[in-house]
Image (cartoon, rainbow, N blue to C red; front, side, top):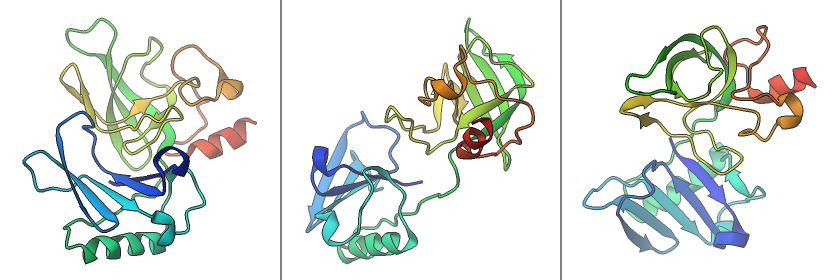
Length: 208
């Protein structure tokens, strides 16, 4: 899963593409023309691509996270192909902030505050570790799926907490910067009528 970012004020005319969840590990960098690639040290797999002079190739009206069109993806992959780098950028356009239903909630072993949930998000059930005090079975919540970019800029990747795999994040209104919609302590507890998988924008529209 690739994510795209463009902020000409901060980074210049560079489109940043990444699928790398380990931003602190050692990396190797290589550039050919306007295409630069990043690999984990001593590995061949490309985990990030930078397109320099991006506005010469793409019409980029958004700043921050960019939701690439099929035509933009085609252009990007053609640029990469011309350099002989072996990488194909693909994106997942499905909503990343959706309603979830907590099917089960159990304490994480050797933790005094973490809970292990199985949370239905419509098309699948995600295992998510949550530290909120008000998490419990039977809640309708707002889930940030892997690939979501939080308002703070934090990217949600699959991770581990206390050695337990976690595939998403159960969100509070504060984390979503939506205190005016439903300012509750802990995670956002949604009304029961919302179906798992309902996108965040539809939730906000119904609550306003």
